Length: 227
Length: 262
Image (cartoon, rainbow over all chains, first blue to last red; front, side):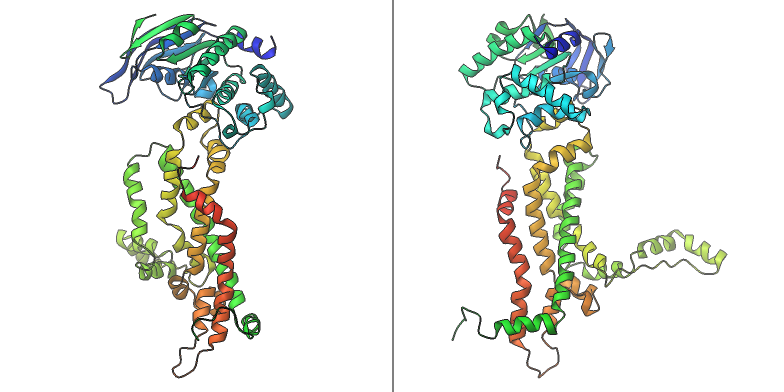
């Protein structure tokens, strides 16, 4: 266990959804008012068919998508009106969304750089994360020179380097082949055991949900079917 | 005889005469200023307008975007007279506005004379460049490039805490480098070979561009034999810079125009 693990474990906060709803045009509700409490430090998988609103829900927790009604709290803080960077959560995207022109190091360090962290501290943090994810030898490479699994790990590194209390995954394994998917699943479970962030993982794969989750939230047409 | 494959023995003499007897060197400097200025400003304007149209929810955005390619359908050659009128007095629209609204009538009553603002940009480098820069091709090029970028890249940058300006400089600008190079070369060539506008907008030989100067080497007076060896040597000299430009930047040119490349 190192500094980053501890920092994330301490920052992990519960996510409270209180009558959260989303509607794009004001008449049809993508997500009708929805209540849920995701406990601190737990690995929650949101499972549901395509188009059931699980990605929308995720985006609302992360920030890029605004809520149409209701409140979202991390611990005791209400965050629904905050910008993504102020919420203290990080996200891993389905197609990784790495910055193609930056090296692995710069990709992971970018958020720290934006936040104005001094260089020596930045280097230290990035190297710690890279060691944890087995990326240390790849720091100078560009994303184009990496395999799918490695890119995935860079995306995870980019998310956890900020020591977020809440970690969000948007179908991160759907682009990988079967073998790699299996391996990454194991790695993710292992990672979660180590860092203990409150994790929300969106998927439509039942096996993935069963193997990874502490709790599973089943979503259908924006409604919680089972939690 | 047909076409001569190689320059004759007087080629160098004629090139030297271009540099010593004509204004072509100075006019090439003018061309360079016009072409580079045109290319730079066009790149910046296109980049910014495409950025606004693609990444921000602009009201009537698609209407605005539909109007932009319309500038391609109205090239300078068609609107040259209007452009000349505006360039001869950039402030004339303000005068017209004052006239129409009746403000000028009031001013004339109070101060004895109406306001007539005047600012001519004819025969200046600015006047040569400005009418060329607002052009839809670049906006179109950048827009198409931005649209093929993964949407999640924007979200990822936001999650990393980058605001619109940081995203522009740290992520979008480095990624757009090939598009920039392609647009720069194309606009540079367009600016360098521009004939009609520099011809009407510049009235003194030392403000004319190289292409206009080259045409002026042939005398307009009837019965006088043009100095063809001199003119041809001039044509070669004037073509060198765009050729070098293409030679140096052609791989970007291709990369920037092929949008599907990863």
